[in-house]
Length: 266
Ligand code: GLU
Image 1 (cartoon, protein in one colour):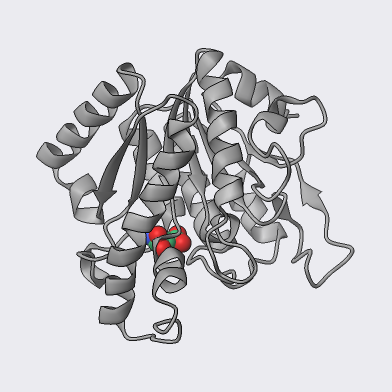
Image 2 (cartoon, helix red, strand yellow):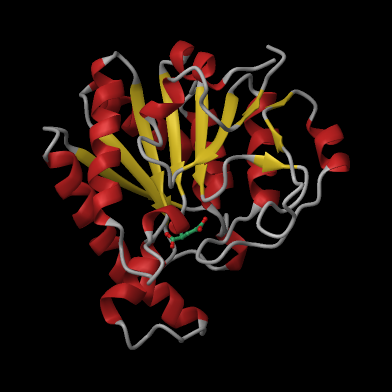
């Protein structure tokens, strides 16, 4: 039985993805208190000798929260423009949060093409290694203002999985607004059960109901399972946990931490 706290304890190189729902408050504005607390928890893990790369969603939400009047624009050009506006705002808040911890951040905006191209992925890998070796926290998002359908990864769950593989991480943590994988949608079915450990993803797929995407993000459960399929194939464990809890990250080191561990056979 895979224990969450053991997975985090033994991991040294960790990619952490934070979804838009976790980064936005219910009214759609940026949750800067969450970001400040999260940066503090990252600093705590870094002091313990761990290395961290963040994959942060939330550009579009931040764009909407900045411009306000564009909130209902669904047109793709507006959405890309919103991401261009929001990405600056997002990184501004992350910089403030990490500055309090005396940590620098670096931004990488990536597309699917970047991972397919050998030369570009080598450059990304080198940049990530250099930043982390120098104690800087890289923060990655999809380059939404240049990605259109053909070169779009589309969701940061898969982007964080590709990043974990490229950087040879030990662990990928996806923070979402639910505790982990449930047998059914816990928001609509009170009998839904949390599945704490998964070592057979095809079997998991057969045994659960996979719902639609969530409120602000683009992912939903399907993309989280796709991310797990990608990383476990490379011997990287994945944790799915609730980012909305107090001490969401460092709390995973506790004995009774809740979430789903996707185990690897390696
Ligand atoms: N890259 C998008 C953003 O920052 C989010 C993608 C996702 O929700 O997975 O708004």
